Image (tube, rainbow, N blue to C red; front, side, top):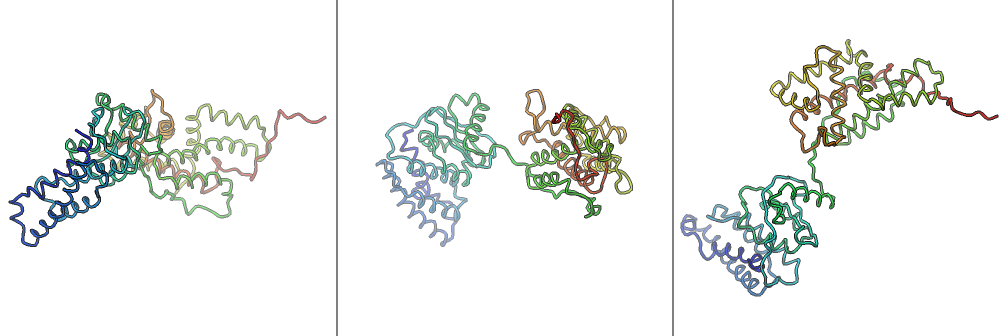
Length: 445
């Protein structure tokens, strides 16, 4: 196909189907008023088609595509059921042809490149469309939904390799505009390696700062059933860092980012708990920086054990006539009862974390299970090892969604606010400051 035909010929032929070869049966069924409206639009289309033919014959770039679009839009609104009328195809062609005419000084009398092809895909990126402008023709890609006005508008905003644009103008007869599916235009060799084309598209989009992951929002208000237990006379200032982290947690919308934020609070408690134990054992007396560092090293060396130790200390704390542990356990049982039809999904997700509900026999085994899953979810979000299960927006399964959104996030909220509400020997310092001395310090003579 010649480039000038790619720009103009389809629009000419489609317009002529309406004004030169009208469907007589359709026209006969219109009332007089609509016949007059149909004829008036056809008269205008005749003039627009004539101007299109002049532009094609003279390789002209001055055609008023907006006027043609407005006229076809008027026709579509009044006669959308007209036989063989494909409005989306025409809007696509107008968008691409207009972009070409605005991008070049002249249309060369040569054929459209045959170096590209396209395939359907389902990416649903928020940017709606993307096109590259790589100097090497065979390295270019374009992604769009040809049936979407938003996608066409987004595509038109890019600087696009002109040969790729001519190719886009040449393919509307091959596109299924009724399916509303996205397409990826890629170099011909990529048609045998479509995943490679998709990966390259994502690299190009990342380079331009475009978002290629979906946002999984979690907007629920934090749960704090212990709100009435807070006492203004207590020293909450010692938790200023925790309050700041929880502020970040509330501010974030993406569920995976929120999980990491709230885990930072658990992590803070993991380091704080052994220091609290030492501070209370010393009753405010000095202890050394060496001891302080030793406590940190113990937590850093085996984080899962540190999580379990924190939960072992937290679960026996009193709450509503029972304990925090019993409250968390009851939340777990209620969660399972609410999702009996989705237990297969839940178990499948737990198996990816190398855990199982079958390990739970009582409150103590539940505490170990709860701690392990809490820690392994964090690792699966943070780590991306070849040999390790990785939680991301791309593989956010139903079981993962249920565990994170319906149990762990609200339960961790409850747990943190419970630990903050009243003085306890798990995360509360008795003193306003910690007294430290350094065994390795050298005294002045």
